[in-house]
Length: 168
Image 1 (tube, one colour):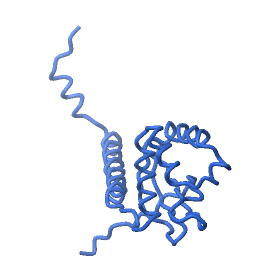
Image 2 (cartoon, helix red, strand yellow):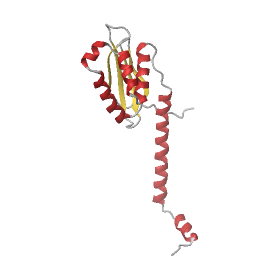
Image 3 (cartoon, helix red, strand yellow):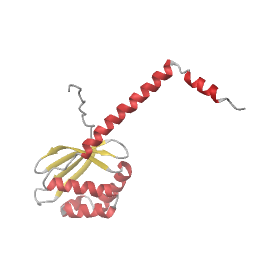
């Protein structure tokens, strides 16, 4: 049995104040979330790696990681780590770890530099799939110029977002 269209319109017009409040609340929630997310994306888009060997190396690592290509990651490791570091951890072991991290994280979006010195660089990045934050650290080998002794990824806190003010 068909319902006349006029009856449906009338039924929809009689929304309770609770329904209206709920709809307005959800709308406000989605607007707030989109503003917060766009602020994070804007900072990630504006991120630039520090100058110097470690900054260049970090950029190459992120490019290799985000490629999803094992051969590019293997090339990064063989080009940027000392031979001694492969005695501690083989290339196959590194690639296995990379594959599991890439499946879990997806791409990494660099957000900000946390620490920079002549021998250390730490950046904060966000996982595309998880939305979680991570520190990615690079430590130069002091005995071999322009080579890495260590690189790591570990969980990090979310960045402190500065609230916009309406003073102007």
